[in-house]
Amino acid sequence: MDVFDREMSRETIFKDRNVLSPHYLPDHLPHREAEIERIMKILAPSLKGKKPNNIFIYGKTGTGKTATVKHVIDKLIQAKEKYNANVGSVYINCRTHNRKYQILLKIAEILYPDENFMGFASTHLYDRIMDYIQNTGVIYVVVLDEVDQVKDVDDLLYMLTRANDHLQQGHIAIIGISNNVTFMDKLDPRSKSTLMQEEMVFPPYNAVQLKSILSERVAQAFKPGMCKDSALELAAAYAAQESGDARYALKLILRAGDIADEKGEPVSDIHVKQARSAVEEDIVLDLISTLPEHPAIVLYAIASLIREGGKYPTLGGESGEKFLFSGEVYEKYEKVCREWARKPRSARWYREYLKELEMMGLITLTMSGKGIRGNTQLIKLAFSPDKVLSAIEKKFE
Image (cartoon, rainbow, N blue to C red; front, side, top):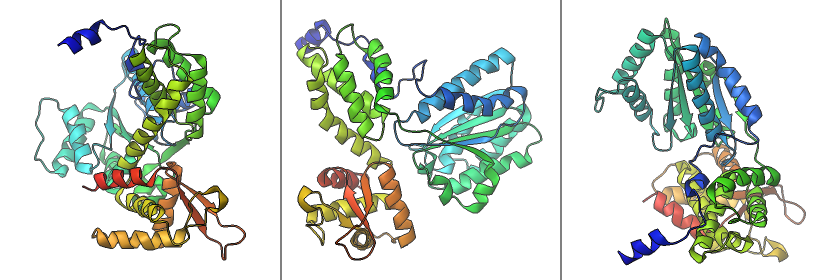
């Protein structure tokens, strides 16, 4: 109890630590005004009882996609009260609800809070959802965050969009959010043909934008004078290097704040530098946890070869950086698939997985140059192979 008493009485540099959480939704979203306006314009017809288009939003991690959509949905619900509109919404994180059944169950439970739907078939859930939409005439907006994580996503999207063909009144509108800009290319043509969607790509933040985002949060999170401006600039610069990821910047300042708080010091450049390695490890684990099965196996093959040295250990040249040939990685991927009792995908799909991993910042791809026979992709791992292997092994436990 002495420890609790000491911690409760200790002075802290924080005013509200939760403001730095990636899950905190601020009232103002700097540098996303244009995206907010466009989404609001697409959804505005719902306030008049008209059918809005579906929206699919893409962008790398930490570009404000989820925060922007949640912000707009909050504004939509406020407008619903103002205009007495028949509009409803549900937000679903598809990392935790990654099956069509789970998503239908979540929607049904929200529409019928007093009923227990556990154990009912998906067809029953679908019928009850349809009954609700038809009987109330509501325009119902379903937000599917990380929609690419849904295992049977083609069936889900086809079912939700075709449902509108059978409704005499009411409508289901979908907002899909994905880190994968090639997500739509992988959908079944049948699913794509029913969507009639608007698409948006959120660009990464630059260092100046990241600093302004951090400045607003820091003013609320820390007591006056407890976070130096140079620390903000350094965290923003590091995050700009990491694909313009605002979450990374916030995690850096939060972790640096914890380090400084333990010492009773204002947050400085030193604390940000100390926080960097721990935050990078968190980011790697978070990214890997979201990977589908086969991209994860490809990444495992890359990390294994980097640790083993690969067939061409001197390919990195004087810099000492280790690169791998695309062909040797594919061979290793096939071998790991066999060892793990998985059926390897074709070379075409393998190339798509490499693009996904590069987009997420887990690897870098470059074309071979002089001194290398033929024209092939060279692959470099962006993080420690030991950390990557450990995270993937945990994922497949």
